[in-house]
Image (cartoon, rainbow, N blue to C red):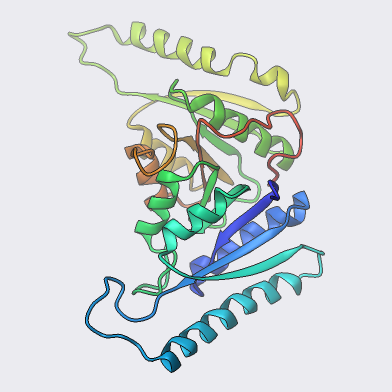
Length: 294
């Protein structure tokens, strides 16, 4: 089992090509093997009344294999020596990607949207399912990201905050980029609490979340930012000039719990740069220097 693999979903759409490009860049920087996964289905996805012939099934399988092979060949054509394999599976996309990623991948990458229809590997709903239920870090490539922009991390004090900050610091250190750690709050009505008291409490919470991280990553320029507003709106706005936005998920993985909060869901749908969803039970590689590079 290779625990350094990067797994990326591919369906032939422009969005999934960008996901493969992003994953290939990451594989090239880290030396990690890259596994391109394409799923396909024959006939109606819910069973339906039509049973395809053996010839029809073989033709669909052949097209799927060619599509995946072409994507792998495009990565090899970069000439960077990436160890890339293409995997074609006759199955539902989200469950397949999760099963493969959970067999030992370090990272799962998907596009923000797909080609549409039953062959769509990376429809928004599939991306959200993957981001919700994965037990490994997930990158949803919503856009290319600003090459000179900062890494932005959402900080809310939840159990996933430490995991998210670790990945964010790793990404910023590898890229030589600054890190903007953002905590948001909704100002109370003046008759309820003094705004100054609320801000003081929020700043203290932000400082507590960041304690110890600058010492682990002294090369990373850190900006701790407290912003009034809804977290999703603030982070989506920052994604316009960021190279990467990192947020934590909820829960412990698997299909038994909804792991992506409303902020993560909105980012996966609307951010304008890649979004990294960090899960709190991810095996820690903080401080190794090669866990995540951008």
